[in-house]
Image (cartoon, rainbow, N blue to C red; front, side, top):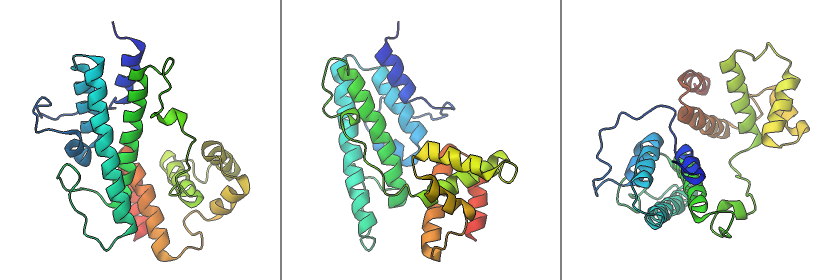
Amino acid sequence: MMNTTEGFVRNLFRNEKPSVSTLNFDDPDVWVCDLLNESAELANEYIRYRLDNAHSNDNRLSFLYDCRHCFKCALDELRFYKENPDFEIAPTCCGIPYYHSPDEGILIYEHALNKVEHAICHYQDCEKLACSESPNDEKPVKNPENTTTRQVLAMYYLAEHLGIWGRVDKSGLESFTEFLTGKSSSEIHKKFIRPLDNKQDLKQREKDLLFVKGHFERLGLRDVVGQIKRDMG
């Protein structure tokens, strides 16, 4: 019978749709970073497989610690390349090329790292141990990339996708955005006046649209991605 921890961790790495991969996850040449670069779903499936087939809790934790080490290493590299765009991007710590831009890669690896750290915490038993390396014990850090402009853009495209933009009172969407983001209502209201034109220079507007597009790509909402591409010209 599956215990609470196993159920939590399996759900943590659950995919909405099963993978069609024919990879042999027991192959020692297959590693999580290779899969994460290609597909977050493949990486989820691989992690679940390794955890399900581990012989002991110590084996599970050892595997998760290795994943965490690689993800942190990749994040350090990607943040460096983001801050120093003139440098040519080298292969990952594991010796494979990055398939994404630094911005996209950072989002992917941050999400994966967060999942792994939560899994580590649960296997350590959060109720009995301090879980000193778990994100639960750290003060939440706001991601500077999650600007109000980008959050309002995301809400605009989501409302368009649902067919409610222009059909519901905009104040309701503003209130809902405030609820989700915790940003001030006045700040949100200003951005909602013209979501696609917030007096930005063209380069910043393109960066914001690319950032929002990346989130919708990971959700598999192709029609939204297509609309953003059209708006980018």
